[in-house]
Length: 148
Image (tube, rainbow, N blue to C red; front, side, top):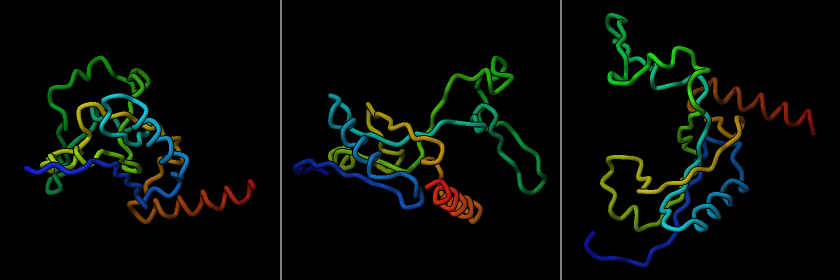
């Protein structure tokens, strides 16, 4: 875009992450606005057993698999307990300046040069993409009602 417009904040809360509430959205905006030169804040979840070092590509025709990452030094991480604490974007919350989106070419997640993270708890990280995810969310809602 060649013309510049007044910039504002765009916040996105995904509906398939039902346990993320307004407290986290508020935290996202506070963190985002409170730090200089930050142009994006996103929700993060802890990596549990899903380490890219161990991710495999599966050929559906012959069921052979090959490493997703071919140049990673996996030898020093024989056990997942050896990994440092790792986080990945959860997709629940994205907050950005509109200016960041104006120059976005759609080739990445548009996180900018200095993104900051909102660290979610395990339940908040629940993401409903498949029927079993929905069943888990329903189960957790029932459990929460039993506690209260």
